[in-house]
Image (cartoon, rainbow, N blue to C red; front, top):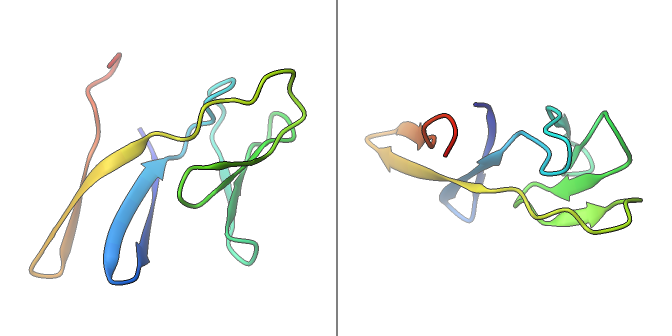
Length: 83
């Protein structure tokens, strides 16, 4: 599993890097602070919220991943395969 990690307001957060529509790997557009799906015209904010889409139904937001930070080390916990 892949994800995107960001620090905002001193807090570290992470979201899945997989589109919730077709499961395509998202691409980061850092200047626009958005995650774009290469399979169709859907984009997500870096916090996982759907920004744009041209689908009949809005896809779900990106799942958040559990993040722990201790001593300057960031650890991202991902769910087991199939969960």
